[in-house]
Image 1 (cartoon, helix red, strand yellow):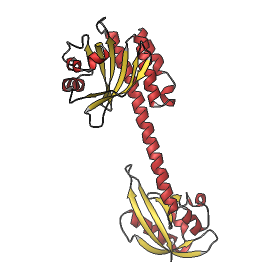
Image 2 (cartoon, one colour):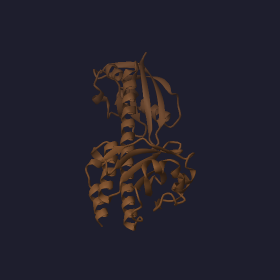
Image 3 (cartoon, one colour):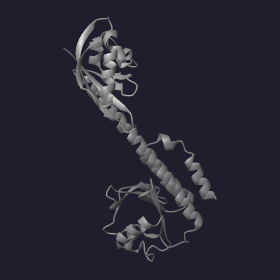
Image 4 (cartoon, helix red, strand yellow):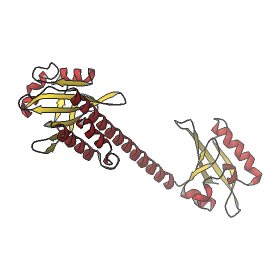
Length: 291
C-alpha cells in the first residue's frame, strides 16, 4: 500500500506538464528507488530501428547518483530482447539462473553486481518503446512480490505519460516552426497572396503585398468573402469562377478587376492553387498580379 501511495503522490506532481523530460525521468527514477529501497532504477528506450536499448536515466540509491547512456544491443542479448517483446514483465529473482536474463551475465550483470531484476515493458500506442528496470545488487535478498510488480507497472505508466507528453510537445513545437517558416515564405513573396477557405469563400490570410495591392491592412482583408474583392459589376462572375476552380473545373488563371480600399478599380491576373487538407477542407491560394 505504501508503494502505491507513493506512486499516487508522484502522479499528482505538477512537474509532469512543466518540467523538461530529462528532469521528469530523473525525479521518477530517484523517487522510485527511495520509495522501494531498490538499489538501481533505470529507464531505457528502444532506438528507432529497435535494435538497441539506450539508458535514458539511471538512479543508484546508495551513492545517490544519476547516470545515463549505457546501451544493451539485441545482437549481444537476443534472448532478452525476444522475451521483452513477448512479455510485459520479466521478474528474475536470480538473474544468473533466469532464462531471460542469464545472457546478460556476459558483462552487464557482473559489471554492476546485479543479483535480481524486475523489467517492466513501456508501451506507447500499443508498441514496445522501452523498459523500466528495477535491479537489486549484492546478495539476493527476497523474491519479487506482487506489490513490487504493481509498483513497477505504475511507475512505467508514469514514464509512458511523460514520454507521450514530450512527443506531443515536440509535435506542437514542430508544427509551430513549420507555420512560422510558411508564414515567412508567404510574407516574402513578391506577389500579392490571399489564402481562402474553399468551402465558405472567406479569406483567412493575406500577405504584405496583398495589403499594398488593396491599400488596406491584413485585418481588413481577413474575414471578407472573396466576392467582396471585386466591383459589384463583376462580383458574381468572380464568385462563380472561384466555385468552379475549387470544384476542380475552370481555368486556374484569369484576368478580373479588383476594387481597392480607396474605391479605385484595377485589372489583375489571378492564379489559384487548390489544396486538400487531411480533415477534408479545401484551401485556395490566390496569386494576384497587376496587369
